Image (cartoon, rainbow, N blue to C red):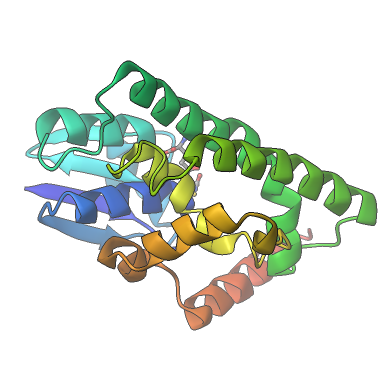
Length: 220
Ligand SMILES: N[C@@H](CCC(=O)N[C@@H](CS)C(=O)NCC(=O)O)C(=O)O
């Protein structure tokens, strides 16, 4: 039996959540309140770094979302989210790594601005958008005629980059400039795995309020 410790609003969790759903794997979800659940001794026993997501499979514990994705593919190869050709594998890894190493740091100020966490300078926002657009152009180039990064097959590239896709417009990145990326986003959003895991506006508002309260309590 798979047990998945997660928080619905975490993008690190969401990539695993989407993969579990896309692979049609039954699992028990344990929703964590990151206001303190992650520091409880039972959870620290699973992940001493106090991060979600964590997957436990019949007593075997996996931390780190990318290790979990690799584990799921190796242990439950059908249906596969792995590209099969050398070019496909390279594309898949490039998109995954560019997402975490380039996109995530670039959009950080945009997320803070969207959520109302502090005040970002105009320059910081302009620079963030410029960096993020380099990633969007990279995605559009790799997507080509699609429908997915690796052609007809949905892979981890789509799972990892695609859990950010529904946010681009709200982050101030004009998707009208990237029609193929918009079509890819629309296609993903039609999939039950994306629809199920997309936070609702009220969940997002509740998260924003909780975070603002926590930041105020910490004097930030
Ligand atoms: N590299 C980790 C990052 C996990 C991570 O940063 N999780 C955050 C939520 S998005 C977390 O658990 N934060 C709570 C904490 O660190 O106490 C992964 O990909 O799994």
